[in-house]
Length: 495
Image 1 (cartoon, one colour):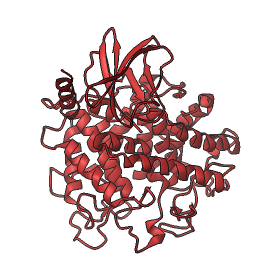
Image 2 (image 1 turned 90 degrees about the horizontal axis):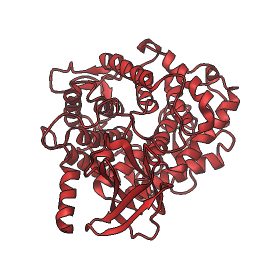
Image 3 (image 1 turned 120 degrees about the horizontal axis):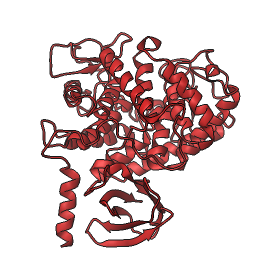
Image 4 (image 1 turned 180 degrees about the vertical axis):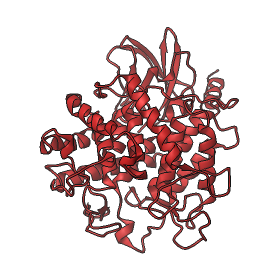
């Protein structure tokens, strides 16, 4: 009986929605984020949804293109002398997956973006994406290598697609995601330091880049999804290294401000901010147009997975920023030296969007959060920014409105008759000593934890939502929560 149950579990996890293409998580879906967070309360939930939906419509018309002669290929127009870059492509694939249900053509767009990704491989690892396309017909060259952030977002988006539509259609999303995740681990993770490399082009022949990393690539919520999808526990090492480097920078280089540099070097010895012109420009060691995404990336990890390391890091930035700006959003700069010296006397959504997400992580930030969101929303048309600014804004609005979710919601959902599978969350999905089981109602919860063999290892009722799992062996477990309306099961990894 246990073996039969386990086989059924595998079928339901990896064959979710195999017989249909309607989305499982239609926008809006209102993810149940972790405890101790806030949303803007100067607008209703319906208004936050409408703001996000409306801006998506504008963004799509401006940047989603299929003018390269193949009607089955779409790309995200990035400008600045190029058709697109893999970073933009990853954003676009995530966005179209998130707006499924609202946008009837979301899967068509997603598959077109997938086709374009497959048609433009890196020459180093052809599962990864060439980081930049200048024209529709770029000739292959030695510079057709990969950038890690684009590939990481593309892999995550494929998991989202599997969650939305299943993998038995035209594209085996889960299979493609797994292949890409493995390629990222092979060629975009430095397995001597467990840092995220700048791209597949970084190797030990050039230590300055091989041991360099970009904190905006510390996309820890994605790495948790990669671990769940592949069962490769080395992603734990990557997550822990990301947070260790963040703490190192804040302790040794920005104790007052908490600001994070665009690039970190010498990750194998004494990590430090990069010098000017390390890779992109004079601000490579400052909080600039790469690091501005850190509050968004880490903020998501706290909201979805409750990792207090993310909350601690982002709270340091916000605490300093509230004081230094005199609580006036207009005083925020698009760029700072790590000591807090402003680079400019103006700002836009590129910086304000992620900082708004970061403000959600502290319940004392309500007034500040409302001001940030008002500023972000007031930039209400695409004239106020370029592709990068507007795309960061849209991703931030997805999170702020409560409509950003992780693919484990589907990958680990086994059976449910709740009104919505997101009525229940279990976090962190990769845990060491404890997990939290949270429902939309705070009643007593009956839960059961089984191992991969289908054996019950815990069966209890809790009131305070915290479950001690410290005595469990390392491995994969399934947490089933039983309520009057049915049951839902989530997959976790015990370190």
